[in-house]
Length: 329
Image 1: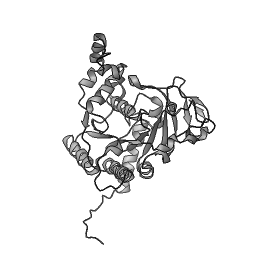
Image 2: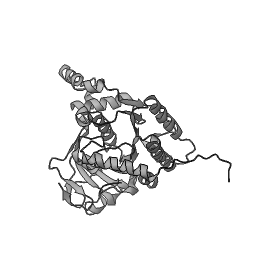
Image 3: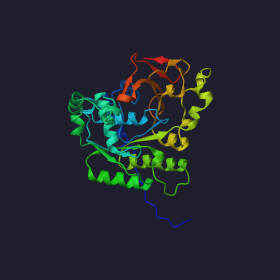
Image 4: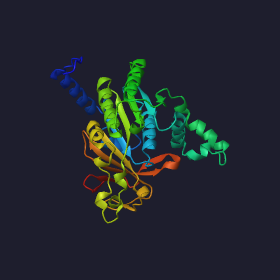
């Protein structure tokens, strides 16, 4: 056996675990806010009170499905005083923006807040009006005063991500930490021999940081090309329309290591007109598949999207698709 140094792992007596469990029960009985809420009530309910610290969330989707926009909106919601002003812990957000620069993230946030088309904000041939500029400045004032969100634009290796996150936590020792990463396959290689190994090592980081510093981890993952196979788009085979864990790039480790796996899916992009066994119309449909929940029932939440103006809303009829294909209120 190689000569390695090992550490003694922390040992927790059951009495300490019982005390923490009782505290969780007391919070729920008192109606305390136990997680960070979003603008989507059905998602909050499915997650038993919102996104929680010490949990690892994997958000996957095909290219162009809206997963980065969805994460952008999650981050905005976490900072929204109307939603989370009464949350008991102070927190900071460290977003590893590997896919796009931080200014683009901010422009997307502006679009989501104001409803102004993102492209018009940066298009000199069709610029926003003076009135829209004043509206933008007024409605984004809270974001401009924000001291919660921080970005990392430069890509790094798995070890670099860990050290950066730990250093950031040391800067804010009295704050909880949310670490988001967009997205996994854009991290730099170290000793990894494949994308699958890279994703596997990154998801292990999610486990380490949520345990060692109690962080909330939200990683964006990619769906593989299987979701585009002809059988998956066939109108006569609706049972194959929904994404599964096998569609997630690096699926074995990513699905195994995450506490919660969400898939953002826009079936209209694949030419599907009626989605799944119940044949839901796909015009403007963004299906949020809850593939895995530690404490909850997997299912699907129907959302309606207009990504050009940063809008994702719950479907107007308020229904969702349960795991067995039955419509639920």
